[in-house]
Image 1 (cartoon, rainbow, N blue to C red):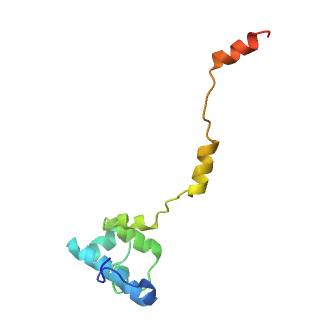
Image 2 (image 1 turned 90 degrees about the vertical axis):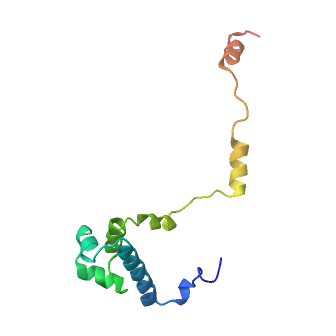
Image 3 (image 1 turned 60 degrees about the vertical axis):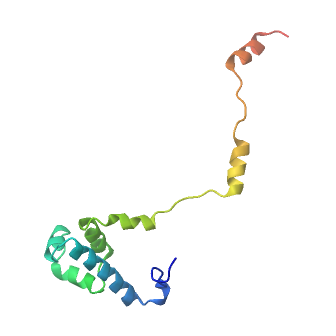
Length: 116
């Protein structure tokens, strides 16, 4: 990982993090050559709310999600997905507990029918 791509997010204030999100939204909006009014109208929010977000001011989470949807950026939600992993010990126990052999039903019937 190079130094330019790595940022210590913990060292930033909430205000600075909000400004980073706002810059991201503004960059993506202008990249798509959209005015503030166009995505705001599609997201059912006011233009001033979008302006607040782009300046790093506090907005609701649902507002951010609506804008991500309108700007076709919901793929960034992938970082929030949870990938469940199984520990090697649990995997070994599951393998051991799995059936190793299956008897045929014909053999079971022969044993039952036999009078030995």
